[in-house]
Image (cartoon, rainbow, N blue to C red):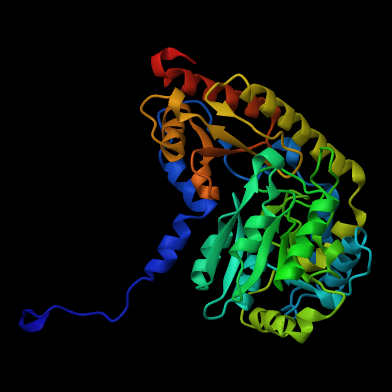
Length: 421
């Protein structure tokens, strides 16, 4: 610069976004992948993600693929979509979800989003106001914390109880809530715990929400991916007790997370969400947001209405077998315990016993060294709010899962104190 003066620029990056991104699952996985030994000739085993679409056994149904092609070829979906989504898709989603409800949803209850993640963004943005707080499960899905931080929405955590099948600690919920609490989040089937809530427990959650005067955000992106004693019961079943916002998508059940089509649905027979302005705020938020690709929306009716049950049964069979394999193999690793055999979603949570390991201080160090030494990616519990736990993916080819668990066992034996494992 002339006269040796230093140029001063009036812009800089938003540090809050950097901090928020570091606590997401994607942020943790990127860090772990960076530490994989590039000289290891073995394939990396991805036991930390929730996207099995790359594996042949998890390819989506041809009906879904044909629906995309058909939608494109009509040339009816080359346009911008309405703010709330195209009507045939909203009607189809309303019908699909109503199958499991004691009342019928209207297309006007359904809002199309770019995957379930945008649905999370929308509802947290709508609920954010000065001083407001939201109750989140621990362990849980860290994207809620990240988006709450971006919206300046205070987060308070209630514990899930592993000794009770990861049920919500409802006493803790009541103790945490105050006059500024706006909502509580439940994830069912559970990510990261692999649990499935009973009808009775969900009803108690609704009654607690009513007592506190808050709504329930029900993340049901893994709906119907169940393979244990509890069938999937939608939280919307109890919408007459307390208003429920249901979040979902085609990403998990149809194994197409890259198609980025989800929904936000109001389960509110009493019209409370409309009276309190939540419905108008949802529309307002979507007015200043992007939309799912219109041709994907156009394919939704065919996807939801025509997919055969044998496709779903095959996926559930594979995940059930993987859950059984994982649960049994974990028993062979003394420094890791699984308190609850997974019955739903694509994951299980296991606890580390660091007292049995040398030179490993916490779950993050365990996962970093595991990535470097064994080329196995496992998500540290701190990414889900539970230090010294691990989340293991079970939506994976059985042979790949077996290989990954064998490498974890060898890693633990190598790092065992006095070689006692």
